Length: 397
Image (tube, rainbow, N blue to C red):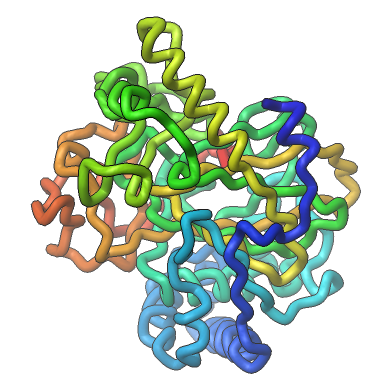
């Protein structure tokens, strides 16, 4: 599979839905982000530095209160993918390569630079852009155990992580996966925004709704058989929690064919050796089918990739990082779609103790799954955790 995926360099294949963000709408998003940024910077209370870490309640209130000022064209462009591809390329935000400064060597440096007025250029402004866009689509959220709980993550290659299964890697193929597949509160929609991609590094996308599996194979994969473990970005400690078996596939609305098929898939963090031979064969067939239907999106600066995290898996082709300030740089936001429901059984999962940072989720309005309100548990967060986590140095995306 590595040899096949690494050769796929097709630019914006027809199989991926493409939408255009009208120029006026793109400028409106940037203008509103700049206005919010200036408003926060000009406060007399000396709290501007807090705002730059995306932890300031005033910033979040501004996002929530003013997102409605954006043109309707923004919400139309940023809606979830509408085709079986499970992914959409949205173009194009107005930006130039010179305005963001060098690509940082890690997410830690990216976060620090965006908080320094003299070094941040417009990276922090683009964080606000990403939040405005994500809020137009649904409810942006982060993870307390990943990138210090930030709502906007920076995806950059990092020295020493070239061969890991993480977004900080470069030389290895990042295997197709559901983002945060281990957790019941994983995103419905994943939003990736491109600042820089001079080497045309491709993001791979494979939709389960384009696969061709037999009914017997789907039946095997619908049975809760193996757990999915947290990826390396969440560090250690998950061993304290029970690892419950999960279904790999299920139908969102019916027991029918692939039209509404849904998946949780992360083979790099699934203990396949613990399954019987029959299940492993079915799982291998799914992997082969996801490879067969794989398409590659090569984003250019200002473009967005929306991935339906319930339908499609994504990865990244290998590349050689230079670490000279010119490497690929993406921004990522996890988005919850309040109108979308998941299996009722997911309400009982422990999420390995990982908590979400969900400032846009109304208190007292927990996630409903199959029409049943989720229990109030420690995994549902409504506040920001500003603690820096060393274990969040890499991320799986």
